[in-house]
Length: 243
Ligand code: GLP
Image 1 (cartoon, protein in one colour):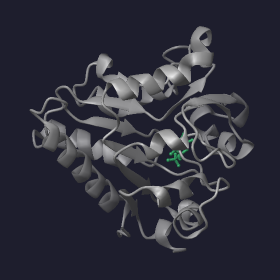
Image 2 (cartoon, protein in one colour):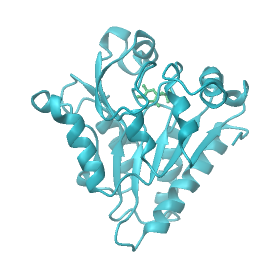
Image 3 (cartoon, rainbow, N blue to C red):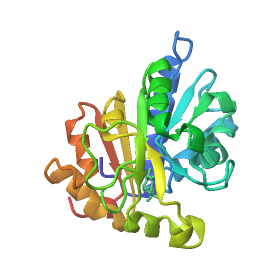
Image 4 (cartoon, rainbow, N blue to C red):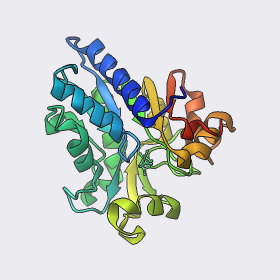
């Protein structure tokens, strides 16, 4: 869906999240949300928080959230840990308790089994209803860099130099960005019932065009969206410029 501005993207994305949460309120299994970190979803999260504070949002009682990915090697509670950022940017303000908010566990002891454990947690919650996604400038989804297997599950990965450079703005310098991460696989992401990719700004135009109109290929991980029966892509005008 091409929209005019990033604010339009945020409003439509927030509508989509709230509609799901409302639909599942009072059912046996409240909504299970998959959340992306990074800068793309921040206006959407701010919109959800503003509506919640204004009293117009849904109840988030019983809602569970699952992050897409996590850095490995940061001290627990580090301000750039994705679990810390999602709580700060969204879930604390929506009133979710820490037990409702999940992410891959990067503690060094359990690293080899961390992927399998996270897959089991998602499964136990009933699977992800709506997965919010951003896209990397190299076409990555979560931290599935180009070359990632299309059927991959949650596992340990090494970041490319491009992604470490892109994310240096959060850490001060590329060298301070961790080299390793845990990330849901492309196969994990494809199991969510609805995918909602958000992209804004001209820096994403090329990756968006490759994902939507290019061949299905591991060299553009986001092209897996072409395989999903219910994938929505919300773009502002600059991000849609190459379509
Ligand atoms: C980051 C995250 C992804 C995110 C993407 C784009 O490295 N791991 O989940 O979607 O890259 O980031 P941004 O939205 O800041 O451009």
